[in-house]
Image 1 (cartoon, rainbow, N blue to C red):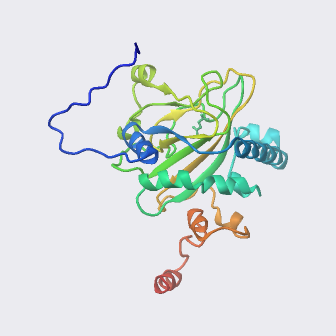
Image 2 (cartoon, protein in one colour):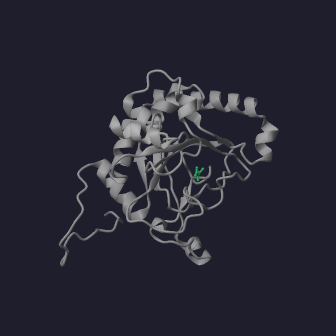
Image 3 (tube, protein in one colour):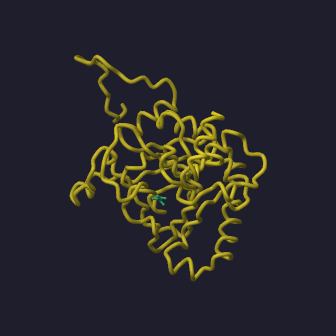
Length: 274
Ligand SMILES: O=C(O)CCC(=O)C(=O)O
């Protein structure tokens, strides 16, 4: 006999119920209610290998360009900013992965933009800049009935207890303040996820990287998607201006051609061609 609890299905007094017609809607419901979910990206193992190799190439070039010591001095050695600006097509593809965007589209009504895409390395045996509790809209202490921003942490390696999988405080996107130490100690959850999945969070859910006790770095690619009113962490339009082969949807997602008008005349000109 199974030890699993049997969840009752009978109910009374219920007038309204959500419908989760498929795995994308179920993931969206999990995220809305709990502030996070694990979402299978649907990548093949060959694709995962390609992304991993592209990540290594960008990491090596990035550290060579900006200097190991300089990055370490400003606590940036374990982050690769704006991965998609470093000439590897996979990161443009990853940021506009249709299955992921279909989930983001269920969470943020109307138009949304890529606010940032950063490589994140949780190094073995030492702390790193994401190993402290934060929101991805940091310094904000309000709640909204719908997400203003959603982050999708792509697990390039499997996220396990031993290699410092991310911790979350379930439901913390619905409460203004950071929880008490006692609540944190008893309710924080470490999210285990296979390589190739996304840990998707309401950007207001408190989270942090765990301690990596393994022998290898645990790598991820963090994406933040937001309503268009929130400024990108690093403007992508200059870096992608010369990129060929972007679709109209990708251009909008990355904020190309949607920069704020610099003059009233420019604003009026845009209205007239809408
Ligand atoms: O590395 C992790 O597990 C967490 C990453 C993170 O918190 C972030 O990129 O905002």
